[in-house]
Amino acid sequence: MDQHAAITELLFKHLKQELTPDESATLSAWVAQSETNRQFFDDLTNMPALMAEVRAYKEGEQLDLEAAWTRIKEIGWEEPVVQSKRIFRMNWLVYAAAALLLIMTSTTLYLLLHSDKSAAVPAVIHAQQSDAKPSSTHAYLTLDNGKTIQLDNSSGLLARQGSMKVEKKDNGALSYSSDGLASSEKPLYNKVTVPKGSDVVYLQLSDETKVWLNAESSIRYPVAFKENERKVEITGEAYFEVAKSKGKRFVVSKGNMSVQVLGTKFNVNTYENEADIKVTLLEGSVKVQQEQSQKIIKPGEQAVVNGAKINVVSDVDLHQVMAWKEGRFVFNNTNIQLIMHQMERWYDLGPTQFENEAVKQWEFNGEISRYSNASKVLELLEKTGAVKFTVEGKKIVVRPL
Image (cartoon, helix red, strand yellow):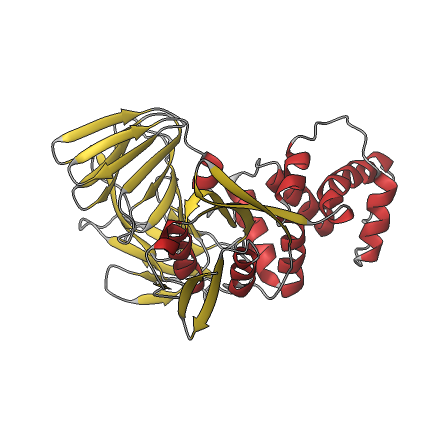
């Protein structure tokens, strides 16, 4: 398949939220290749209402293929090599048309601002694009001997740790696999650290468990799991797709809090400047434990850990919870303080200063690409007519209008 066709298919699946982990990593690598790619990605994903149309698209529905093809020519894409199979070209055009619906129609972003759930002030905002940030994944890997490897500047085989090879794949993923040599008797540990201002890091552990790390996060883990318990330690936020391993439970810990699973998909948010630790389950079943308290949650539920207490919240907005992994800011009755925490981590800003206590109570609804410049995100929030931002170096001052 031609590269343009392949990327268009990935964009289409991204908009429908159907990407596999490997496909997601491939698309992220393509977006990071150039400013043109990132700009095009932003054009497609900064239009929430139209994204919903593409997600609702079903195979067999009629799309305006000629309009799509005209638009493809306008942005400089060449027709793929089709050889003798006309149906290949038509299938690619269907994907292209679905993805390009977002460019061929209006580009408006609707934001709702309100201070309580009983009153709302709507604002219609025209999404504008700018240079993308963050522009790199300046995370680093710390080996068992203390050596650090900058992941941005690395590719291929990075190290050998006991019987395991540590590699940076073409799609940007950090991967562990056996090199066939005799295993070390001593347990070896590695750590991946993702600082503020860094893009998301994707890694695959030795048991094939997949992990995504958000900015200002870290994970410490055994290079090879040898005990009956597969245990890792995190800070910040991470999403796990745990591989099943008979008789070996998987444990994620942060201080006294632990999440215990056998095979499942879940998100853990443990940021120090957040009031609670939040464990959100997408598939399977997990047990969340904090000191003497424990809860088992089901898909769509969230365990909220505060002190020694664990509360379970049902009907969680999974789209909002997982937005960071999909390259989005999604606000759903989100307090301005939480919004600013996200921006501080993603753009390496802060600390945010609020001019008075009243402005801390504002809440927002809305959605925008995280790859837009920070100033554009602030500009969109300002256009609601309720707040004003002043940037002083890395510090942001928030004032009411």
